[in-house]
Length: 508
Image (cartoon, rainbow, N blue to C red; front, side, top):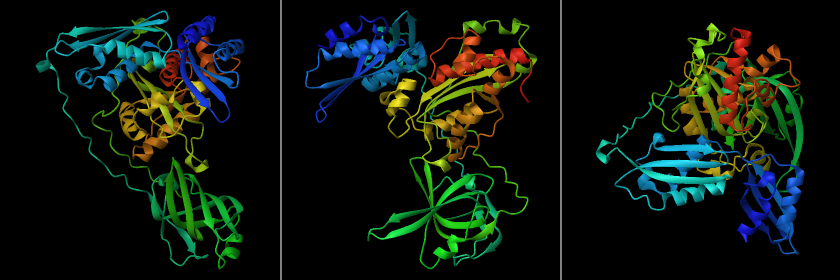
């Protein structure tokens, strides 16, 4: 029946390569939800056509809904998926493979992949199984073949395992000024920088100015209504929301506090799904020292080795003989840039304002002497469910991130990739950098790099109706698969080079 359904759906031009990604049956509400993946832009009329076609195959007593995701694979995505399928289904073969043993070519809607394997290994069923895995994720047709690899088993290079040296980053503290008791019983001399408070502790002291106060109530286990407060305080390094549950002996004292007062909070810090919770046990008076200048953050050293994500050499035929182009400014020569883009679970880039969202994909390219020469790309397991909105926007599914490494494994490698480079991104200062800075800092890596943002640079140099990435790309005749980090990063790199050609100097 699936073949019949697909045959009918594929009569629509924009669904001609579609696949059925999922079928969900809700027996309680008597509803069937079908998930489709297509590689083409679709319209409301295409969706109505598909819904009408599906209803023919669903019992009349069931309601029917449809969800369509547009996902356009490229050769690099298919190559990664081929490697993942081999690693999952053919472990003996996967240990002998490296990146260069898999090649993928795109021909129209079709993909042809070649796997080089050692002659001593059985290749039975490899291509059939890999193709089956690919068809569950992507649209189009896939054709694979295995060829004999010339290297012998005793010629295989066994990569020596290296361990990066661990390094404990000290927590910064400052001396509390003008301490005075309000309701506490123990004098506090020092406070932790709020920006450094990304750890759990049963007792930690912070100090800052009240920026906001909210009085709230709750009902306890004895059905008695109680009062608690939410304070937002700042010590100039960061802001933090503090929860304080009142006591009878101190409630009147707490009620005297107002916005602008400087306080010292002693309490407990907890991390839950990226959200920092701070519950104060006692509140006293105290302030940040006059003329306070934060100490520079001490960072872990750059890792000596890549451990999880290794950059790959990158070449682009459009860059050939780039330096014969006299319009390429001198300011690009002798410089290294890392142009990056992220996909995330949402828009919250500050743990102080709620549940910090997670990175689900990093795409980055290294530009040396004006030439794009290396790529760094990976999915990241966010340790949470992806929303339907994010899946539809990015085309990234649960299956793509579930087996991916966590940020703890990825960010040290990304930090190494960025070493000595100027960071570049489109709206990077307002969004992307906040994520990489936060997740690197959680691991002790301080990503203090110069940032060039192509969004304000585009606004300065171009006259467009808007300055979204795809609009700027259209200006330079660049086409790409928008809302995928690796594609957005590549396009941003191309745009950056073109903008610097126009400006003929780097932004100050």
